[in-house]
Length: 125
Image (cartoon, rainbow, N blue to C red; front, side, top):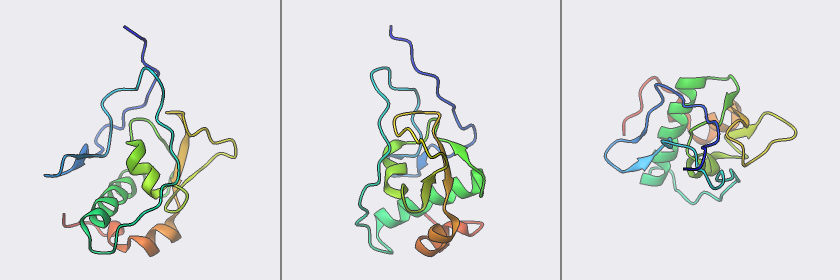
């Protein structure tokens, strides 16, 4: 069996969007290659299911990490990629999009403008 790369598991972080099958974290590292994080276009309109999923993921990020930098770890690359380059940005100049150890941070002004509901104490899903 191939040795899995080291990957921080964010204990207490929600596993996904309730009742949808959409995951927020992965269970184990990919032994073949780390899925890269890259800015993906977001087509979700405000009020759509897709917007709510993005808002719920950002809500979880904010309430777990706040304004502090965090390691990518076991956070789902697809979910991060929909926020990356806008609401979530790289901390390091030499950001490695294929590293589980890459450091990220919430770009709070942009995130608050895009998803103000993510910063409320509770988010209805």
